[in-house]
Length: 361
Image 1 (cartoon, rainbow, N blue to C red):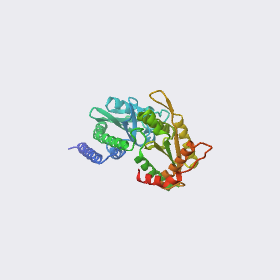
Image 2 (cartoon, rainbow, N blue to C red):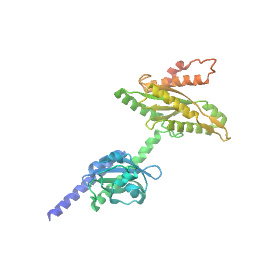
Image 3 (cartoon, rainbow, N blue to C red):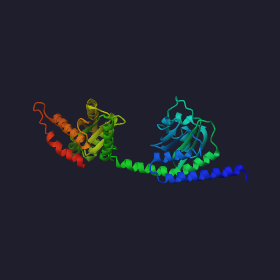
Image 4 (tube, one colour):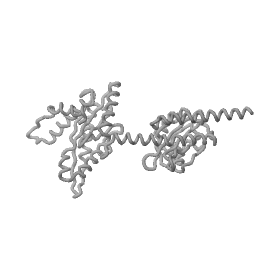
């Protein structure tokens, strides 16, 4: 037997063992990023690559990069492209692998036309579950035309193994997302708020920074339900949720706390920023005119109060109780006739409502 034959047998054994390792590791993975990280760590022993990426189908006809590593990964990991555009978009649409494509086309399709890159060639394979293509795996290299049919065969086999794992991970992610989301408004729910605040408390404690919570309560919500019906009440909550989303930054968190209450978590915000944003949120809701089935336009307004970490408290419950007290003071001031003044009963309620937030009631 010739030396070349021994080398081919050794290579085939290495390939088979690596594919087995990948399959075993993927069987223990439950997240998309974890799946791709382990694929990427072993893939380079079988297929030459300078970087790799996973694209999955997003909403409608878009592809979103869910994982990228290696050269140019910062550009790839933010990539969103239309199905049919770029190399991955073409593979997604046609369900066939593409060998030695021009790597920069994926960056162009993702809106990075002005960016220079050293990447030259690409090998892209579809992730198929049954007859449905759910995404692509792409590897890129700085050498032009470096991919062979053997490389395609190997990446197709890995893609075949990975497709079901990625699909299961996406389903799991969606289930987790649904469990943390309010079904009526699409905002995060109380469970999500507790998780976000816990992380923010840890981050702010380490960094010595601030963050704020704004608690908002829809005024006269019972009257809307009583006069115009519960469908109108539901639409009012949805309109408020949309206004809050549009008036906040992408990295802030909007939450439907329950009933007609909402909470907005403002990252890295002190007292001045929190008060400014509180007024902005109230103005955004005040601009809404809810149209009823009879054609009547009903104005919407919210009372709001803000609390700042650590000045107003160092726990989730304490911050919400302080924001709640200020929200009720704001509500009383907005209702009271100017000549009569306002009796501030909020301090008497704070202890009871703090217990409510502690128990989640």
